[in-house]
Length: 380
Image 1 (cartoon, rainbow, N blue to C red):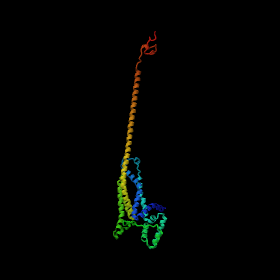
Image 2 (cartoon, one colour):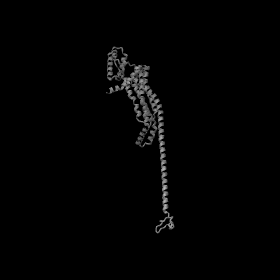
Image 3 (tube, rainbow, N blue to C red):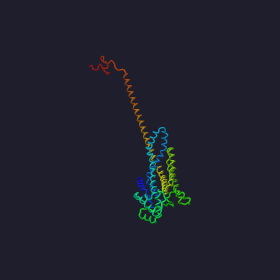
Image 4 (cartoon, rainbow, N blue to C red):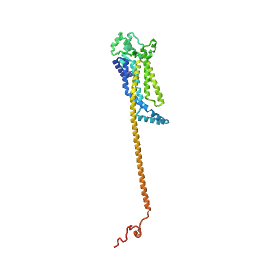
């Protein structure tokens, strides 16, 4: 099941590599073009990853401030960090996840390189490739030839043996029956792309040649370029805390060392892919860093302007509320003064003595005649 699944995963990559090989006739050039196309396809994901990591890097100062402020309250610190992520539009894992995409591609390419018959020549099904592989072994055996490679790289040796012995009758008969067979030329710049550098280190005792030196330089060059890529990437993304700095330093060395190790124990073709991938990544890193530095500065300026506008609005609202409160207080004070004056007048009036005279008295009813009464008014 897993073999079948792996085969179908490899099909699009094998088809792309085969297309470039049919056009160029060079396995090395095909690998470089293959790497370029893969980088272009992955560019949107890499851009997303780069933007996320650069945003995280720009937040390092704010994260340190939060860590200092809430060093004794981890729960509050976690809440404030999540709030900061939301405000900045950053996903903590968003940048990391896309960084793992090249790994399955590397695994798929390794399968294609070491299994050219089942993965490179036959794209119609695993059974067809297996049938061709069995027939090729029988033809080689019938021609009196023997295979000496391990099972892992047996198909590479089969391709090379059939290519160099096509004039032998059993092999010629095999080729006439399998028209989909592709003659593989593993030579690139005088180097054998199918050779494993680690298995040829002892060949220096037989003399030094460019083919041997170049073969040893492939893993070393892949490691050096991988280290340079890591340094350039990490220099634009300073770590937010000591733990992250240690992790970054470890990754800076781990990936180059791993590429050197892989370059020595696997076919040189995989090392060429790693070299091309590192070169394209360095160029990509340069342009993406410049692009996103400017873009993030513009975004930060916009966010700062928005924050300033919010602060201004809050200040204006605070001033308006304060002015309104002052007006309310002044109105209340005025009302209190008016009420006090009225109370004072009423109290003063209540204390005044009634103003009248004897002319206004009628019997025992004081004031009944009024203040303007004249006793002669109704006399003839």
